[in-house]
Amino acid sequence: MSGLAVELVGLTKTFGGAKGDEVNVAAVRGVDLGIQAGEFFTLLGPSGCGKTTTLRLIAGFETPTAGEVLIEGRPMSQVPAHRRPVNMVFQNYALFPHLTVAENVAFGPRVRGMARAERDRRVQEALELVRLPDVGRRKPAQLSGGQQQRVALARALINEPAVLLLDEPLGALDLKLRKRMQVELKHLQQEVGITFVYVTHDQEEALAMSDRIAVMNDGMVLQVGTPVEVYERPATRFVADFIGETNFLPAQVALREGDGLWLTLEGGRLLARQPAEALQQGQAVTLALRPEKIDLAPSNAGGLGGVVQEVVYIGTDTRFVVRLASGAQVVARLQNIGERGLGEFGVGDAVTLLCAPADVHVLNN
Amino acid sequence: MQRQRWPSLGALYYALLALFMYLPIVVLVVFAFNDSPLMVFPLKGFTLQWFRALGQATEMLKALRNSLLLGITSSLVATLLGTMAAIATMRYRFALKGLFLAVASMPLVIPYVVLGVALLILFSTVGVPLSLFTVGVGHVIISVPYVMLIVAARLAGFPASLEEAAQDLGASYWLTLWRVVLPIAAPAIMSAFLTSFTTSFDEFAVSFFLTGTDTTLPVYVYSQLRFPNRLPIVVTLSAIVMVCSVALLLLAEWLRTRGEPATRRVKQ
Ligand SMILES: Nc1ncnc2c1ncn2[C@@H]1O[C@H](COP(=O)(O)OP(=O)(O)OP(=O)(O)O)[C@@H](O)[C@H]1O
Ligand SMILES: [Mg+2]
Image (cartoon, rainbow over all chains, first blue to last red):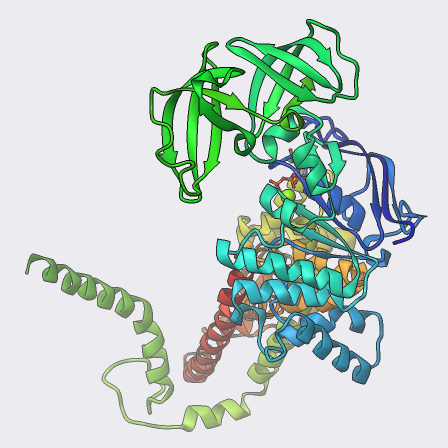
């Protein structure tokens, strides 16, 4: 775990514009990132936020408008795609239809001039690594989507790249297979120890697999951190909203009390821990509350009160929509354990929302 | 009940159409075996004498040889040029691409007679003597657009990410072309070559204007129509050529469509 596998410095890509006849699209805007060697790093963001473009800039399929890509400390601006020590797993797999599976996997070693015997041995190893030892003679079209996905992985991994780039590699698979492949991919990454740069717009997938996540929006990186960090301490409202479900409530800073901070809302008040930055008394802020971190109590408990408006049973949990005095709606989720959750509160019941100070996030407006 | 009358009407229509289209060819083949120098019914009897006489018709065989040679050479050149043009237009963005495409496909809509006259004027102005070479130039011009369209259609059918994948795996541009683009496009290129060949082989108007002393088969056949007694030999050769052309075109079509479903699935 020494040194950076990939470093992006002020990386910017603007499409169009050169000819002046199209609207300029700033796909990537000044991205600075350092990806550690051996890390499972995920670029997470909504559709069109520039994830694929970032990956293609690293792979060398696009030329940056400004900024630089460094791989293992070496600047890549003069290095064409076919000389970069990275390999990519394409979203549509891009397997060569005219070659057999074994020939597909052997493509990289062959191009690099590896001897036949050595090559055959490595191909077999690579196919065994992705648990497809017997399909070497088939054409890609004769494989299922999940199998094609693994062949694409084997074809990339056989080259032992410094960095493996994966563009939504599980996007085309059905949910169940997807879940299984997530686990497999993660194990595979730990087994081979190669740096993975993984692109997805699925936040659950990102949380489950990554060592660190960069949350992107609109061509920019908003937050970089471990799954726990980005989920528990979202830096911006966008991050809180995009990763998991979040209630946003307008509030005002009331007073500091020890290491806590009282915030007033219409209909009550809440105690928050932190924040690091200094906030003025009376300042308007936004509170971010995760539904699963909110507990409900009968209305005499004090704190933030409201009325239950909707109760939805969703199997593991029950979802309550509570209406505050301000008219704002807050979603709370209670796990269905014993007496809790289901049946505990009904529509029209007055309740109090409880939330541990550590789980009340204050976002500066 | 009501619905069943329509297919039979359709079948009748289809039969008439097929008859209209293929009767001349059938007649041609039938007369090649007819034991009479006159092209009239009723048929006189079965003979192979015209096929034997064909062996002695040295001039005609020479024209046939010329046509084969010309067809192969001009198709090779047209296939090379057309394939390169197809790759350029499908995989690169460049200035005036629209104009390039329009110019390259112009021969599709220019009448061959006009093209023949135009080339004739050009060659005589520049001082190039008419020969099989000049005919070849005309045929290349005619065939390039066909090649371009056939190969471009194939290139459009597979995603550019395949080429990126090849480069990602370490292949240079030329190696990518050699190992990925050309193999995938090969059936289309082969089909384009065969299409060019048949076009060149039976092309008359351009050949007629541009031919020198060495002539092509269609031009030679036309010149022989003045001599009624040579007609059966011409008919016989035509029948042979006809059968070969159909076989070639079927092969070209088979090549063009071969493997397409497989690639379609990969690119989902
Ligand atoms: N070759 C291109 N020419 C012009 N605009 C492009 C090009 N490639 C991408 N863009 C634009 O750049 C922006 C970012 O695209 P990109 O493909 O990187 O998004 P993404 O995050 O991968 O999205 P998705 O999740 O949908 O794949 C989009 O607005 C897209 O339209
Ligand atoms: Mg993308």
